[in-house]
Image (tube, rainbow, N blue to C red; front, side, top):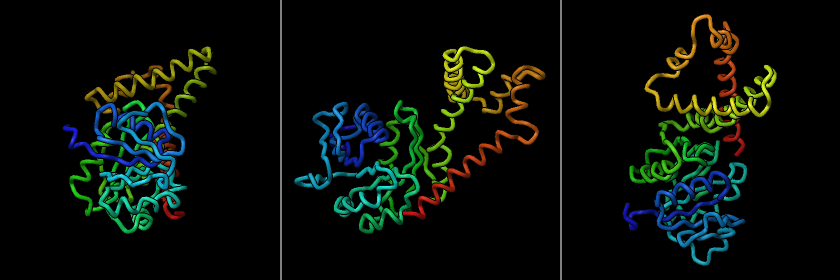
Amino acid sequence: MMAEQRPSLLLVGCGKMGNALVKGWRAQRLVSHLHIVEPVGNPEIAGEDVTFYPSVAAMLAPPKVDAVVLAVKPQVMAEVAPAYRPFAANGALVISIAAGTMVDRLSTWLGGTRRIVRVMPNTPAAVGAGVAVCYAEPIVDAASRALATGLMQAVGEVAWVEREEAMHAVTALSGSGPAYLFAFIEALAQAGEKAGLPPDLAARLARQTVIGSALLAQQSSETPARLRQDVTSPGGTTAAGLSVLEGAEAALTVLLTRTIEAAANRSRELAKDQ
């Protein structure tokens, strides 16, 4: 990508997700200049192509940017977003990664603009293996959608949904999903300990088994169902374990369905509370 074609961005908030995005953007040279509003600067990402501001009020002259990325928690979005109305009024695309914060509410805070892309990334973005799902209204043109897609592809895969309501389920599945997997690794390790393994070995086996299985699922042309069947010999040890995990009533599926429903309902509650 030619330097003059690279966008200039304003990132608001540089926590774990913001930091992961910045590292991805810089590694792939996607941004011509990055302006970051963050009370505490980050020396890890300092450079000539980065300007830090402790607050938007500290900008002597607001820079002209192609997009504003709002990477703050949904609980503070109502307080933070209105300060960026001038950028939206000057034509900047607004990209929000706040869970449960709907376009209507964002538009109100930002002075009426509808050039907004909602994005739900997840924490594996920190190692370039995330997945982000985007939503925008029809008014957002193809070029703006391509910009959002390109920025998020720097840290993983990207998908789009056509209905904003679907973002609640996206948040529950992929946004919150890493926590479910980490909890599974913890539980698997604890179960290994109870079966007689040393704690360090149980933790190592649980972690690497999940990592290796995920890589196999990613790289194989087979479906997860087929891969599961490949491990499961009739009457064998795996079949015995699965008989407990799945059970006669598909217990694992029921449990995960309840998990996703609870997280999606909480996303809807957050949307109503704002």
